[in-house]
Amino acid sequence: MDKQVSPALKEAAEQLGTLGFEVETRVGQSRNMMGLRVMMEEGNPFVYEVCLDGYLAAPSEAPVEGEPEVRQRFYRAEVYLHDGSQEYDLMGFTREQIVRDVLDQFESQRQLLGRVYS
Image (cartoon, rainbow, N blue to C red; front, top):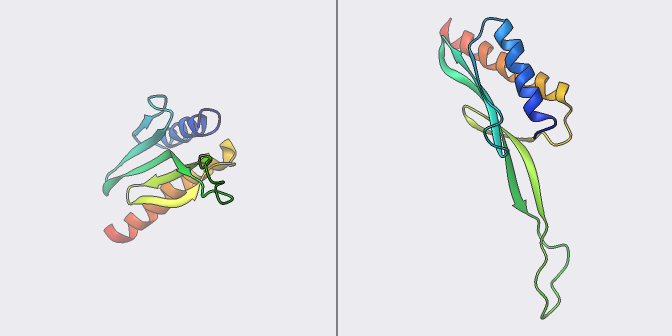
């Protein structure tokens, strides 16, 4: 989150700002959730958030009687937009890939709003 997501969100916010959009970032306030919001004239704001969600993995083998069950925790840097989870994980993405994802999601929402309001 600190090495890839945070710098990528800041870069995406800068790029959107240079295009004239008002961008509010939520970076550095929490290590578990960060994102940005762009106010849209057409309606709901564009929201892109990344949440570090932790899950317990299923045990890899049956527990031995008398010993505690060992379960590993794994994490997903899951993307959420205004309408909820997008069901994909940014773990392993480069900074450039994350910036591109933000800009692609933003453009998708703009195109959708353009069709609705035209």
